[in-house]
Image (cartoon, rainbow, N blue to C red; front, side, top):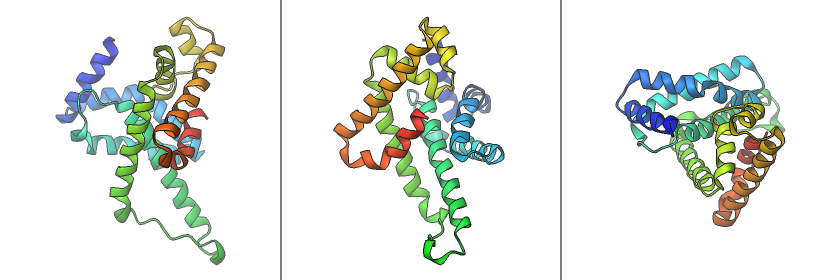
Length: 200
């Protein structure tokens, strides 16, 4: 409860441009965010660059947060999307001279608004689905996915077995996917890759 209150205060201070609050949020989440990025891009140097880009985006968008917004969820979603963008760009470069596989290059200037809209949609859907999870599953999901803690650490913190943590994660991932499929069927297909990112 205390950590949640501290986070709300840090978010409030972040929106006011408090660099110290930003640094605290960075320290709290950068390892988990880096781990998520590395799972997708597979290259440590690229992962570091994307990590910097994600936290730069957090600072640039600080005024959009409200006290009860989830920075962890925002970082999770944005790191996924920015990682995908890097992979798309690398794919474009690798097939640039193969006509039959030609892909139009990504124009960042044209896609900023679309990217932001996608981030917000995915954040909203994820937050809504996580909010209706049973308390223990929500706790396990948050600690493992948002905070990047290992299953062993979470098991010790909650006094349960690592296998129980694994089971809770699988059940949470299935419940989130089912929730989106039932309540927002037209977005379920577009979020398939996002679900894979959550469970990998």
